[in-house]
Structures are given as structure tokens and as C-alpha cells.
Image (cartoon, rainbow, N blue to C red; front, side):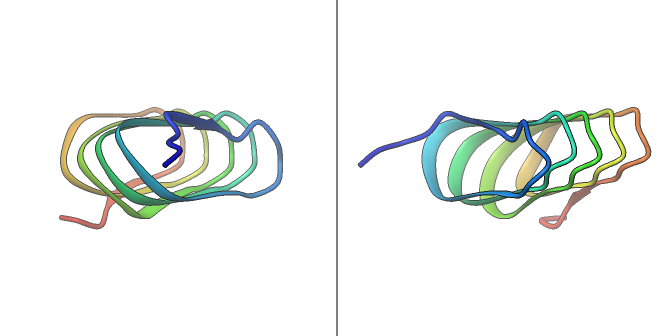
Length: 97
């Protein structure tokens, strides 16, 4: 079965990645496009720098590290958030808590 370790949405359109099943996964959202993720992983790293939103509500993660410096929102489903850095106008929401 193929697996993916990282996805980066470098455009202004939407990106959807489904059925992620790996130990580690990183999502980078540097511009204005929105990203939607689903699956099951152990360690999630999210980097949001632009105005696009990241929806990982259906990506079940044990641990997460989230950095948001843009105006977009990040929504995750993590048992534990090890690190959360927010310096823009967007919000970081963990639906697991």
C-alpha cells in the first residue's frame, strides 16, 4: 500500500488528501489554498503561513505540532498537542478536546 509523508499546497486552490495511514505526516499550507486531510497517524506536523484553511478534523492523530502564522484557520483531531504556535489572525482548534 502506498504511503505519503508530506503534502504541500503551494497554490490558491483546494487540496484533499484521504486515507493517510503512516507514523509521521507533515502538511504545509504556505499560501492561500485550503487543505483537507483524513486518515490515521501517530505524529502530525502542520505549518500554515498563508490565508488558506487547513481542515484535519478527519485525520486522527496521537500527537500534533502546529504552527500558524497566517490568517487561515487550522482544525485538527489530536489526542495531544505537543506544541502550538500562533502568530497570525487565524485560529487553531482541536476538536478532540
